[in-house]
Each structure stands twice: as C-alpha cells, then as structure tokens.
Length: 111
Image (cartoon, rainbow, N blue to C red; front, side, top):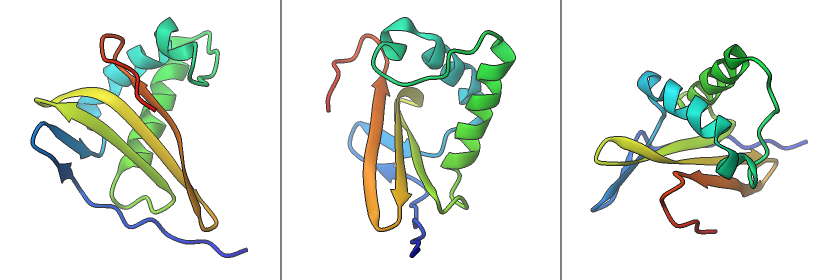
C-alpha cells in the first residue's frame, strides 16, 4: 500500500475568510456544532450520550487539524476570527476526497 503525506499550509487567507487549524478555544464551538440537529441531520456524527464524549471528539479534531498531522486535512474556516465552518478531508492512498462541510445554521449550505 502506497501512502502519501499531506503537506499543509498553516493558514490560507482570502479577502474575507481564513482557513487554519482549529484553536483550543474552538473546542466548545466544535462540541456545539456536533450536537446541533441541523448539522447532525446531514453529517455523520456519533450519537453520544455524554457531553464528555463530544469534548473528546472535539479534542481529536483539533489534534487532526494541526500542521504536524500529515494524514488528515482539517481546517476551521473563520470569518473575523469566528469559526463558521469545519472542513474535513482525508488522504486515502492517492485519493483525496472531501468528506463533508458542516456550516453554521445561518449560512447557506454549499457542496
């Protein structure tokens, strides 16, 4: 099996948005997004019973998004410093596929 490492940029900055690793202060926001019924209706999130489980998953996503993780391509998408979108990609062999975008409920969904 051939594997390929992801080389990430620390930040990608556009006129309005910044893509970058999740920050520790995004932990609560990630948990809220994973518990939001509008998001979980279309995004596969584990059906946890305990809040601590959502925090553990948020911590794992934060870890995956860091520049030194070369397997997962995870970025938070920020508008004026506020995380509005979570973007997850995973490199499987030579194929990189976008697995899902989940957005804040008041933003229009794009695919």
